[in-house]
Length: 351
Ligand code: ADP
Ligand code: MG
Ligand code: MG
Image (tube, rainbow, N blue to C red):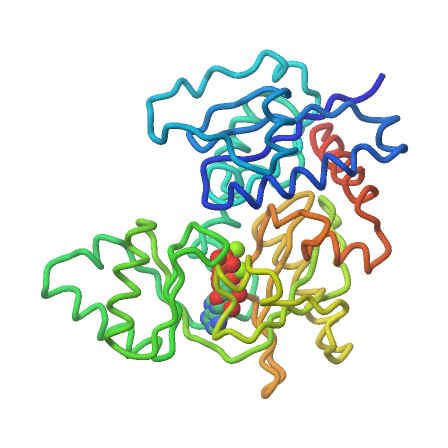
């Protein structure tokens, strides 16, 4: 009998459209002959309100590439799952950002007592919150930029506390610095501040996205990424580099065709590449990730330093995304990668 796989995509996050594209590529991979023999895949779509839709709607969304038009913020019964949900033996969630990559969905699937691809609750939430993530990395001895954790209430406090906060940041972190909502992705809400005025605006903007905010020292560095695959004995891929000519890898640069490119393998010394691979595996273990993660680094060429930037526990997964491309270059084709991830999910549930 074929294994029933629920391919879950969409979701209540700014990366809804990215998720649709990732799911489309994964569905195609399940149609390769060897996967077709093993798996029966049913797509499920979560709309921007958080409602689950069954296969018919999900297939339509995958074909059109367009999110379902919905009345936003209407009160919906999110507990009304399509009946086929109960038949799934393993889930392949490919939702990016909050409500998908952050442990919430992983908690639901854990309660349902069904296997799923990717990290569990702990790995997912540590991988999503940049403050918690950095704490875990620091505990594992991984080098990273200097940072400071801040809350929205500090930013939106009275006219006396806020200037003090900015003074502290200038003193402890300095300029340029990066101001980020702690729980987002795709560079949403992230700004670079070169002076006090930009810092104030950046803090206000980040506070509009998240209660938790992180301020980091800005580095001038090349951006290197490594794919990790496995459970308790994770393996690292070749490393790749993202190149672009904007000031930093912001939302527009990420999602505008031709604004950035991937170089695989990265043109860096072997010694650095090996260090990146080792650190990627350490980072994966430090947050208790499982299945897959893409680990991103800063390579400061001038000093030869490698700093960890972040881990993404459900990275972009289209045919053209860095994660599958890195594995392809390492010798694992997209369809084999998808098969391996489902097997890792099943293996994890057994133990
Ligand atoms: P996201 O999870 O949204 O991808 P990142 O922390 O990776 O957020 O930041 C997005 C981009 O911002 C990075 O790829 C990089 O170009 C730039 N950036 C972030 N932090 C720093 C930093 N401390 N120094 C230099 N550039 C940074
Ligand atoms: Mg990220
Ligand atoms: Mg990033």
